[in-house]
Length: 136
Image (cartoon, rainbow, N blue to C red; front, side, top):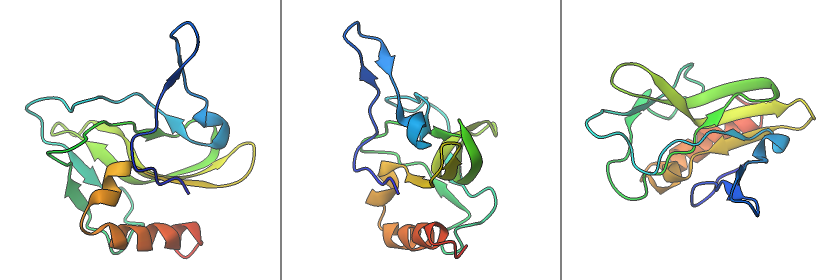
């Protein structure tokens, strides 16, 4: 399980080129933003309701650290988005919580760092641990 307290970084090599090797571990990340687009309503939602105690949709945070580094399917033989972000036009912007089984083996479950700051983070973690244990 990956539950960072800050956004996962995109490291740079000696020439300044971004290097993201998280995909080797089944964590395919995409550069999102440092600040969300102005004037849009962003919503986190459950595509398949695999987190039974988490609301079907949640508003994207409006203050604090709003850096977005979404998870994407990448090189996984299995990938299950558990909580996705979409804008007010319905465009999906990546996943805040996702489960994957990398082609190289193993399992990974990732949670966007800001979700752990929510007052109901314990409910989310309960459901995420249930997914990790194969109970959902």
